[in-house]
Image (cartoon, rainbow, N blue to C red; front, side, top):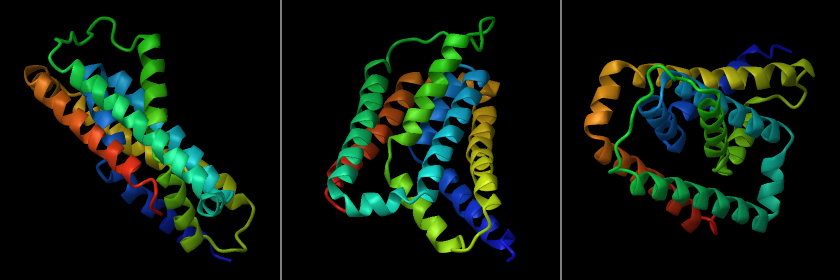
Amino acid sequence: MDITIPLLSILASIAVGAASPGPSFVFVTRTAIALSRRDGLAAALGMGVGGVFYGGLGLFGLQAILAQVGWLYLVLKVLGGLYLLWLAVGLWRTASEPIMVPKTMEGRPRSLRRSFTLAAVTQLSNPKAAIVYGSIFAAFLPAQAPAWTFAVLLPAIFAVEAGWYTIVAVVFSADRPRALYLRWKSWFDRAAGAVMGTLGLRLILGAGRA
């Protein structure tokens, strides 16, 4: 069985999903601009880990479980929505506060760990990702796929997710985007908070729907 085309189809679908604007994109962009390139890269790795987590769950059929256990899916969506709202409130409340972009202390270990962790949690805040991954696998992965396929897919998913957000981090941590952010920080943070809040509310309000 030639598994190459199904694998490429799966990875292409995941790449399209990763490139779609959403809370993950907003988080990595702001982290790269407001903190440092290394923080943005740490956030990109966190996104990759989140993608691998949902990819693994999708491979093992979590989407089928969530489809059958409605209350569990509802709880996960509400929790994810509340997390996004928490991020939104934090951005809005600190929007008017000045920020000192680190120069000599760029990429402090504590900052990198925080950026990585918050990115991974942001990626995991939307349980719909489990459904998306599961649907992609169901659509493209043959029922009789060889065992090694699973060992290849998860690292490839990490590469796609982390690779995309690495590009985002590098682009938005450049001097010009950073200078623009520092000049208009309050507006950027409020806009990012509004996006996060809107996505969080949509997740919560849509919790009762499939």
